[in-house]
Image: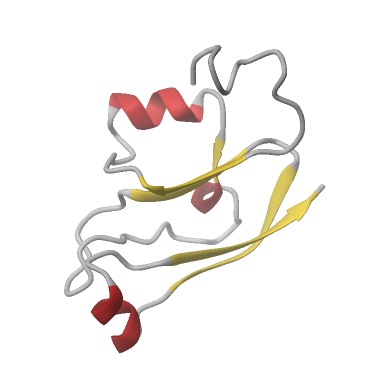
Length: 100
């Protein structure tokens, strides 16, 4: 979030930050990111944010897709398949984005 990256004067255009962030929505780190970027799971009307960890019985939402204001969210899906559960201890999030 510092001037070395997100606030750097040379950073231009749309930006996506995604992955296993190991931060829950009530954490100080999450709140700091949300001052600069939007949480895609909070942008889609009627969407209930999905918990992503752990795959057997998802208890926490620690995987995120953050975007800049140039994006809108068309759809969000969290894969709950047997293959997804075998591949990782996190459920994958698929976010269909559109440039606005």
